[in-house]
Length: 189
Picture 1 (cartoon, rainbow, N blue to C red):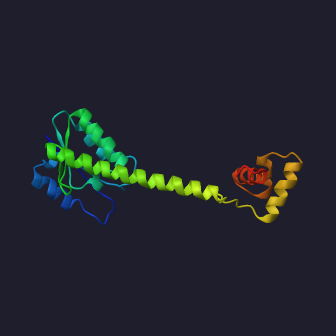
Picture 2: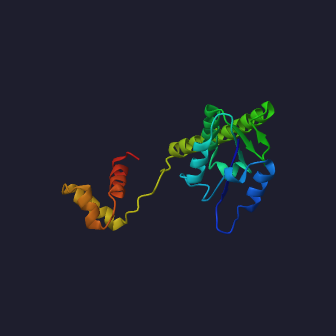
Picture 3: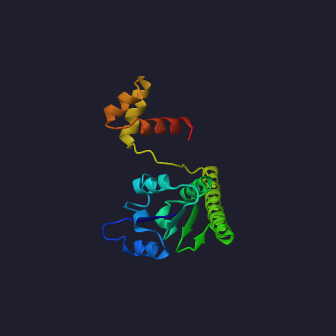
């Protein structure tokens, strides 16, 4: 059985184009799950219903990959889910069709290149952070304490006051800037 899924992000979009594509492909209108929700939303009730409905031998059809997955990691999880359930997958725009050997190869190659690119970006980021740290640059959020607040923190620390008391006294909602300032003065950052 063909099971379709369509998603739009805003009230200004319509389901018409995606629905028309799925109907033309042969998906029965009763088997099309649709929802209006942001692509970055972690919970997608209609997608979850569609996935729960799938059984061995079904084919899950979307018009575009970006209508289905919010990230490469999410897409790979979904493909592993399809594989475990013995469900095929078709994306009409990208011409991915795992019912064929060529379609499976196309998907795995595309996923491999995407993962390779993500790993390169991560590697470059780690290298850049290491160089910045080696050159003495402070990483992370900067201390937000004013000069006067720093003097107060120093005095209260000498008096043995707790970080919570100090934060309340100088009007901070969090103790984090105080810990950061004290650690920086002690040479930990």
